[in-house]
Length: 442
Image (cartoon, rainbow, N blue to C red; front, side, top):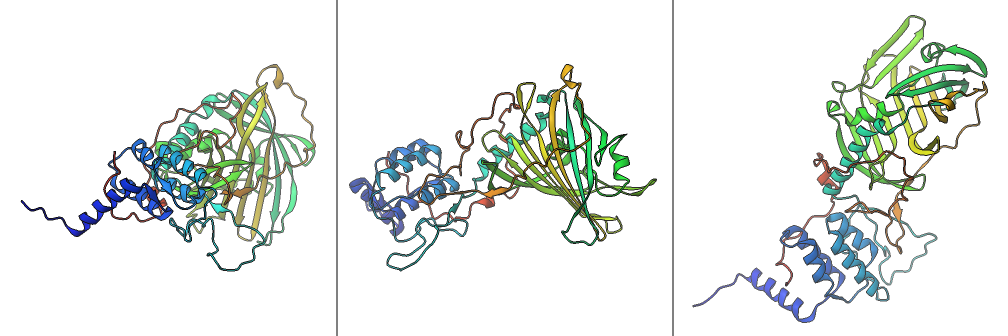
């Protein structure tokens, strides 16, 4: 009996026999093998990792290559095996080209061998996006966190400091129109605002009357804004956006969009007493969250599709959360918000701070001063990168338990539940997989 093998199959068989015989590879061969295993999906992460541990590399394996493979779907055990190979090959010469090159990544050695170059500063490599499965896991943690957020908050009061600015010439040259101090009470999920000082003078009024004097007003910064994004009735569309660093902590950033038919986001314009207009508008934005816990530390809201006949043409709000102390217990609460609105040529800006948190009870009896405290420093977002010579500080395929410092107990607890894969999430992978080769030997 004669057996006929297709030429391609014969070549693959020879490739496997060669692997069994010498167990040596260069980095390019290793990359092709891992990517092919991801396409084949016939072996477990443990099996692939066991095989990788038997290999001997002839070139240096870099952190970038490992992160690229992790972003493409390499499992945690395979990644650990690759990291061991990285350590074993640390003294070897790096490959002459980037085996996992993509426009979304920066090579460890961007200068070709033999090419003279002068560099004043090495460029940090951006962290690749997580795969679609990990995006769904993080999004599920965020949803659980948001929907349960208010249930974990105590009843409290705090001072809301609103510094108000306007620019009547449609530029960015704002001038102050004063500061409003309000007692903000949070009781059983309900928010209550009571203004007690305007421009350093005691007053007994509410936010609506303050808004009638010009400028913008804002309310609902506690759980309501966060919860409404994730409520099923909002029918929000989510998508991966980027990694970021916020106040020294690694953040997974997702974008979102909610159409006007499902929105609860309202804009109110007051031209004077009895002259008020209010609309519900579609909105979009960004959500910054801890990838390990789902804790949300920043939300950006941008109103879209505002009717042309409405006086306000632009509205944006950025809300920051951080740990605060309430009666000796730590909770994640709003820390600062910034509100920007444009009406005709008039632009307004509110810088809002939340201070002096107190629990309801005996501590709630506080003497409030009419003068505003000094402004808080603004929290700036930083790019999320890792050193081209160091280990990446953030996960690409699985949330790393040590990527951020643990929060002090007392913050809202989360119950991780993977969410369904969101539309467009699979597009985060910039690599095209090759034709699959045979599986590794057992």
